Length: 189
Image (cartoon, rainbow, N blue to C red):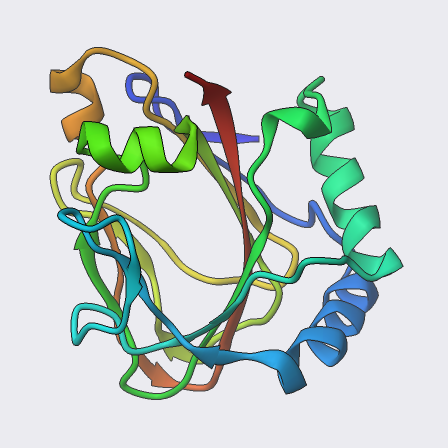
């Protein structure tokens, strides 16, 4: 484990998921990806936006390969699967990005419509990227490059000042394709 920041807690674990498992996950998700959406802060509806131009998929049923990845996260951090939102798979092609954003819900209406608040993000990079595609925290001046099997974790269940530091973005991919799996730990309202 490499601690990148203590508060807010940000760390990586290289080689967390085996390359073969990452490849199997990509094979399963690739045909199902659709254009990404964001949560509208006024209506709490999912909408397409130029704020994010990648591809995503949140399956209703998971393949055994994905269950294996999730279980590894649960065991490693002593967490219960009921504390998580449905995983989201992502693909970023050359030039694709997600501008600076927070993973926790900023409005009460979004919290209420979802029935929970996100408290921590786990990103598992399923592929290497030749150039670009970093997860970058501008307020921390900290970037994490995609690397197959690498896990990135960051928490945001602190006070609002500390949570503000978890602003992050997916920088544009310059060369290659970035695949990732995102898990959000949640707390019920």
